[in-house]
Image 1 (cartoon, helix red, strand yellow):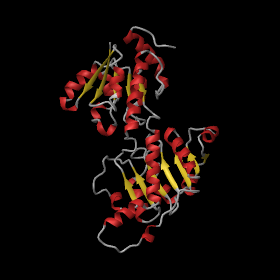
Image 2: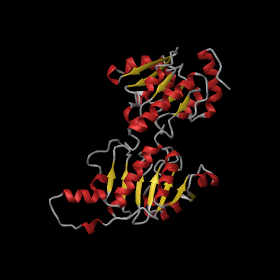
Image 3: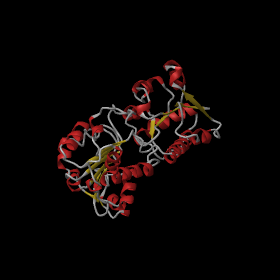
Image 4: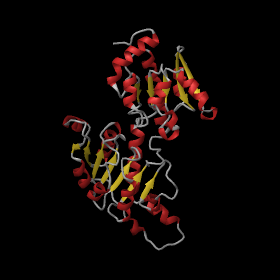
Length: 345
């Protein structure tokens, strides 16, 4: 019997329903209301940990060196979506613990959310809606003349699962798609429907700049004052990735000075942002509470994919979405010692 622990609720009931058919997996829910001592007792005896997103998890239960020390039989840590910035991957690798995510499960939902932000901002839908709700009528419909997406340039920072899907959708509007991703080869860009450019070229050429890369030491604050100054005055900035990749103060300054035309922001450093966050003052900024991937479809995918991946892990298979392959040798040794059988080749 293997023990798999998770906090509060699985992403979708399909996860526990799927795992219920695996009689060798003891699925144990934990509740924050039960207190840290009770939850640590469960985690310390667990072989798997299905984590909640970072914004919903106390830092005490972030998968790092202290948690790994306290959980000697832990074989793998799984996150609910694509992002795993709350996980200390280096510590997990040294400990022989697999880190897996559900990358791709949210690509359609996030790409569609991004498109919604783009359309609303360039067509001035939000600005017009706010105006029409006000008592004053010191405007005409011509004050909210919008633009089409047709023929305009979309610059994608990070051409992974979400960026690739957004590029596909953009082609429906006959948009030109350029992208910056230093980890891809030229053939990857061609296959994913985008032209490879440098970050500076992307910022200078794009009518829409959309961020779809993970938050890492390399990408933290990568879009700051200098980068916003390179963008066109009619450009729109979108981020549905992670808070901290763009500088919120610099973005506020760019909006206020009309250095760019607007922004759609689904992510903040502090989530949810304070109600008096400076970006929320502008009609040409759309803010959403990190819910680009919160759809019934996406939650079902994440729940099912996570459950399937745990079944693979406990069967000794290589999971399809593990992020630290260099841990495999150490992990394989630990798996055989803990489970009493070798991993599958």
